[in-house]
Image (cartoon, rainbow, N blue to C red; front, side, top):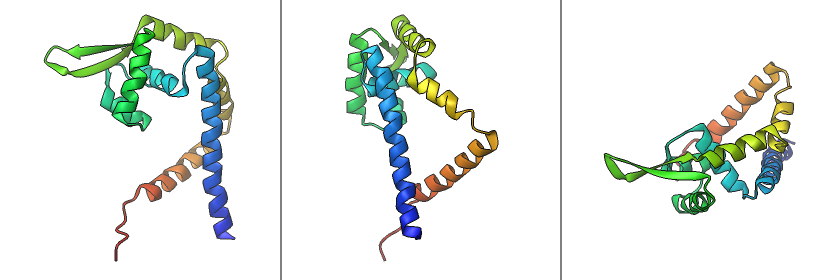
Length: 150
């Protein structure tokens, strides 16, 4: 019985992730972007002057993948790369005026993700807190490094 519950629990996270990605893709399509490009725009909007490496970590992607995503967003004039005067190798990213406008227009019009998140946030606060607590316990277990060799 516990094994069936275990499989159901893991499957539920996979289903949630897939559903979220589909909604994100709808929003991205509305902007003429890919879901990864939209996620990059969101992240850069929350953390101005983020480095490429930090962005890759936040998106859980490789630097080379994120570099390609950023290249396309730079070409579309939504993100700008800047270098620091004291370290010309360090590149920071920030949204351009167009990038801000596109994100704001999406959020004010018909962002499917924003609507669904607002709906989820209508859950009682104690339910949300309990879910976060359980998720953190699960993450702790999944992220723990155990020596599997005997």
